[in-house]
Amino acid sequence: MRTELDNRRPCYKETIRDNNGTPYLLTVSFDGGGIKEAWMSGGGKAGTERPDILTEVGRLVSVSLQNGTPLEDLRSCATYRSDGTPSTVVGVMLDRMSELGD
Image (cartoon, rainbow, N blue to C red; front, side):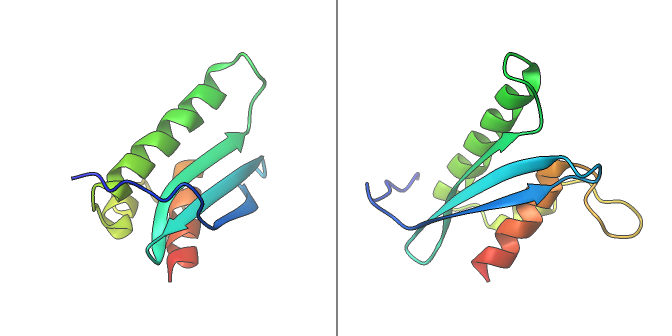
């Protein structure tokens, strides 16, 4: 069951970069000692599909975390290269969230 979050909760913002060096703003919020929400913006021009995709990814990750899905389970869904680096900015986001949650 989805956990209702406090209206006021700590958050953290950081610029992350994909494999091409494109910057994205990652924002995560914490509740009950763990990450419960994530937003990501950047990487494309307004009016293109990319900002909408980033919004949807953030919503999917947030709802999953609020329903009790462990972050590591979400990370296991990301695609990684043979050298262990994330293939997409979604993997970069999930890896950084995992580091922040430790």
